Amino acid sequence: MLVSAVMNNLSGMFDSVNQQVGDVATQVGTTPANFSPGVFSMIQSVSESVIVPIAGIFLTIIACYELIQMIIDHNNLANFETWIFFKWIFKTFVAVMLITNCFNIAMAVFDVAQSVINSASGIIGTSTSIDGTTLASMQTTLEAMEIGELLSVLMQTLVLSFGMWIMGLIIFVIVYGRMIEIYLMVSLAPIPFSTFGNREQSQIGQNYLRSLMALAFQGFLIMICVGIYAVLIQSVSISDDIVASLWGVMGYTVLLCFTLFKTGSLSKAVFSAH
Image (tube, rainbow, N blue to C red; front, side):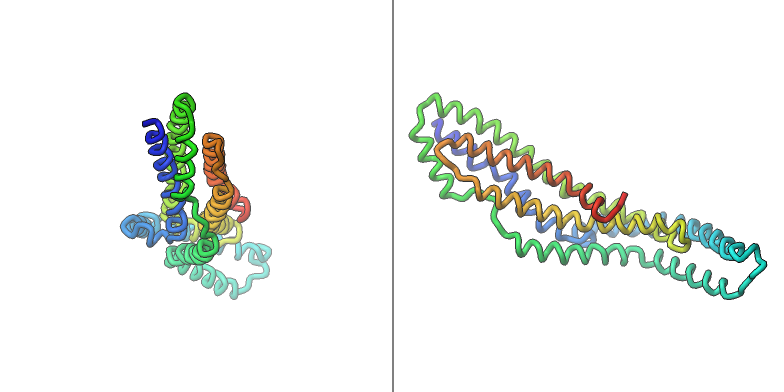
């Protein structure tokens, strides 16, 4: 009875983590438009009806400020040249086109990242699951134990099962939380794109693009973390000391969650986004 109880814990222990880790490649390799088309269409419609008019106001203010700066730059009209108006019209036209196509530009960033992630997922193909042969060898080891040892193993596997379930939940929150953050960032896209008409204010738009790149390529870093985790898990040998081996697997899973938390800040550091 104790052996059956321990085996039930062992067989279900890794299911949650294995499912979440196995779905990582699919989730992070999906563009925002394909991840949840209903949510994306809602975000796009709200942004176009609410944020775009505000971006138009910002663009008008920035365009007027830019025109004033261009006029007074030439020694307060002492060296006035008419070509600056054509330059101003061109810059304003580019800014309007950026606002109009901000969603296409944002999706292009994630399309590039999706191509990179899909290529990486084809290389990182190591399984993170515990196969049936390993479980069978565990059962043989358990059947040779005394009742006291089995009780100790049972209690520890209960703790490990709960810990692995928590780790699976954390992985779910990190992966899906990244996509929610992407939707929130994309919803405000017209406002940063409206700042490209002025050299000083364009820093807002440039930092926004860097933030989009950081979010997009965070998925690539998540794939790298999962690939490292898969290699480490396969290197764990289930020896006669089952508990020590399981705690080793638990340690690698905690390490995976820690590194997944760090992917966001690391990606922003790489792209100088803040």
